[in-house]
Image (tube, rainbow, N blue to C red):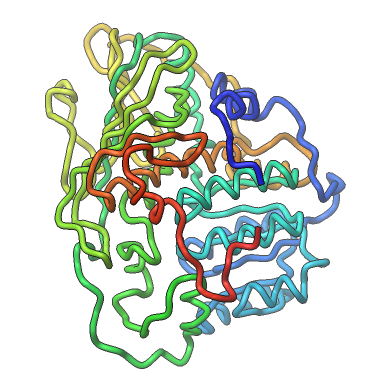
Length: 437
């Protein structure tokens, strides 16, 4: 499979030059579903966020299969979707139900996103996958390229992409209202789970309702411990992607779109103590991006674990739990939530600023996906867009583990100054759980 994907190719195939392009044209879908036929959905991971993803799928079609490694969670979902066949192992689900499924949702821990989503893509099923799209940089590239090759409908679950405010903010930046942007700052209140800790030494009995081997999936074998479940897996290198992976697909989203970001030229992380088992308690990561089309080079800084942008950047505004600042030569655009549900331009010169309507309004995040399955326009957060966003974000985690500034060759997916980064760009898979490419 071709690995050299240039920024020019990406710009040609996506919509960083204008929000409306994503929804302006129809896309050929492998299913060729009639607009009036019901989509046959299968959901992998039906607890937590998976519960609402299931509900979205069921409201857009018929739920024919559900899969989860927790029998209690699976049983509750079965009570809601009585016509769906139950599975613990999504591999078996594909083997038995492949010809009865049009689309899948993947709402599992990060480390199993790619192996599950890839099974769907290669079977030419439409795929909705929760954020971050993948666990590694390499997986994000492979899913993006495979989705394009298969020609199926795709979407990542970063619902803020459908917000009218996010699309309006993008329009403001593209119009030059705040002038050239040379720096951006993005922050979060994560982590809200344990990090900066070593692997538990105690081996605990596996609860009767948990299929631990299936939960591990592609990750290396280790004993069960309640330190990993149900939500604490996000802080462990082998399973999660930390604060950056959890929230940047939301908070980085508007800056990524508005600033037409492509591959960064360098990434450097300042962190607390790094250990081989879990993410550091805090980080500050600086991405440097080169000149893009009509935009100058820009520095983008990420903050988590209590790190925050300098107070003077806020111009007297109160710092929210999460958000983004785009510092332009004429004004600073500020979003004060995870999803850019609203924004303002700071400073007295913009006291009477009226926010423009977006060029294209979304019918709803998941509805974009359902309409794409039936041959309609691509969802805005399709894998072309979402895969690129995820790939860039996860480079921050690579920089953390390397412990020094990375000079990045994006098209070739390599750090030019530190070959030791390769082991963190592409992970390993347990036998039987390899990425099916």
